[in-house]
Amino acid sequence: MTEDTHAEVYGELAAVGPYGVRPGHALITMVEPHPGQEYAYNRWYEDDHYYAGAMAMPWMYAGRRWVATRDLQLLRLPEKSAVAQPVTAGCYLSTYWITEGRYDHHMKWTVGINKRLNRDGRVHQARTHVFTAFQDHEATVYRDGAAGPRDFHALDHPYQGLVLEVIDAESPELRPELLEWLLARRLPRALAGSPAALVTVFRPTPLPGDRMTYVKQVEGVDTRLTLLWFLECDPRECWDGRFAGAVEQVAESGLGRVELVAPFVPTVPGTDRYVDRLR
Image (cartoon, rainbow, N blue to C red; front, side, top):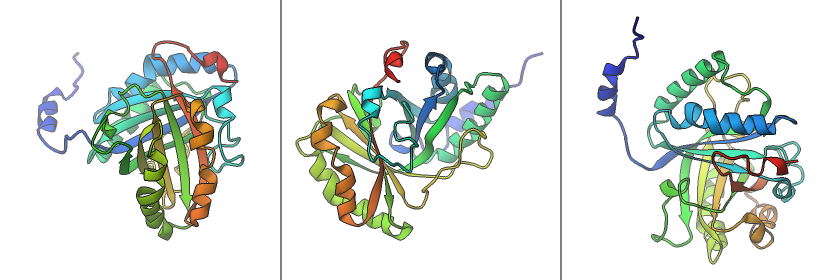
């Protein structure tokens, strides 16, 4: 008996709805494999989950994995983080772009496929989600104006590093003012003459009620902003001069507080490079 895959509706679905290239939404997920599971986790994610649980899904059109070796973990700020406890937790980061206007459609598929993967034994359980959230795009700030790769290129362009920065506004009412300050003042100044080519700014959205139970509900939905700094160099080369003062810079604004500044380098797909340097 042939399984009914409803193939006849694919052509109908392709003919309706937004299909631009702008990253209107993102999935940003920072995960810690349990001790002793580092190699098994990396192989499961690289060989199966990155594709079956992400890139094969509708409207998730770009992705990249990043890793923080132990020396990069030790650069993280602040010492006491509301995002990661301890602040060194979460050595793998995955980032994905979702087509603008397709968040609801993607979520229907992702909830369904993850239930199926879990039922079929294709989910690596020996891991902890430290910071996992779907996010809506607020803005992108470019160092070089109209020149260079755009934000929709960012996960395919060979950037050498990424810095994840999470900032909480002092109140929900102050988040728009915090965003305005970032876009008008802090980010343009920080980008000028720096190895960071662009910064994307997102705000988290709640996870659906029927999500998998091992992923906790998103915190800070009303106050939080998530920044991704895309670097043309290894983050170790520019950390002290560009990122070590981030906590103080935001605090001086009086608008918010930095909850995490975490550097990463890209993984090398199909390899176990860096796995032996996580602890």
